[in-house]
Length: 227
Length: 299
Image (tube, rainbow over all chains, first blue to last red; front, side):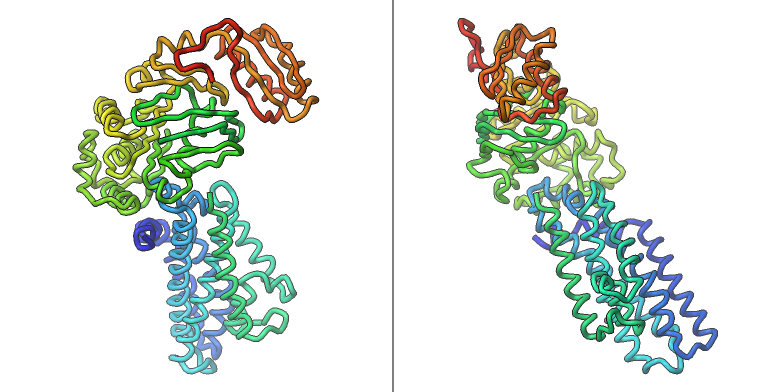
């Protein structure tokens, strides 16, 4: 049944040209900045692009776009109306839809972060293969956390307008290093990519925090879809 | 097959009050519109809305039961189809979810003469085409036992128009409960075996023929139960200003309004309730002494 229910959100992601244009543009921006860093011969090129561009701007917007597409630009409940009309459980359909959004964002985040790490790799960055692997893992975790965060946002508003509010909240909370920064994905992702940690948190703790955010936000989003 | 017992429900700005009805196999018409709570009534049966009180039983279970949901098909004026899929993929998806054997989509769509839509993207369908596809899915599903259709002949592909009526009747004869919500007495008369009138959230009449329904819609008394006597008093004051009300009396938290025409009475009382912004607990029709109700009685 999960494979059956996944058909619709996967088709939304794969068959929506607007999504490909948007994600392509965000990825081109990140890779373009990586190429600039490479051309300049920056010693910490990968770190700089991953923290300043990838983690702070491109990855959230990539996840925002992919989740919105998986949900069909609707609320979480609204995105499952079509399959619920055939008798599918709204909660299961919502879980599968959110899962597709999270998986797509994790995959996109991993590929993007690894690509940026390779392209912008500088002399002072960690060894290339290890850096690409770690960046890919962090990109996947960050992408999943953002996707889950936006899915929870999409649980609010008739057409899921809460997704935009979630984006703004993340930017506002994650911009500082205070206690409130612990609640949003932005500060934890910055910490994992080598930026300033929130409340002097270790990278391991930030990784755990992101994993918890993935779980809690996804469950919250599914809970919003129940009839 | 479908039973509603004292069901009250609300979906702003509409409310259903104390609705009791039982439907078995066959085609049943609900005469009324969205503003009367018709779509809300269908949503309660389909399990997409919850009652505030009372009990809804569908196929011997509750409408939210996954096993029940898979055997219910509801086609409203704005049908929900999987936007990113093609029509044939939609039919296959529906069959997989309902747990029925997959059949060629063109064969299923051909029942309503719309097989040319088979390979079209759902996004490219007009509203009329989308409704025809949704109806074809429900009508041809081997697992669907309850079919709920809002305005079957409104906004529908012309190719399906002439074929729909015999298909719905065939499903009714086949042991399905087909409930048609329509504001058109002609459509109701053409399709259904029995009819009820839904006005402003209350069933005002029920009969087996449209003609009997007309006589059943005559005089009546509407009893409205408010949450407290203060609300009841406010309602009495509001009703006393209405020209279509012949008499109004208060009995504790209950208000009894009388009029010569049940439909007008229900509409007027509904308007007064909305105007005074009251939240009533119950509303039901009482037959006036000495009057004969319709063959199956007024609710």
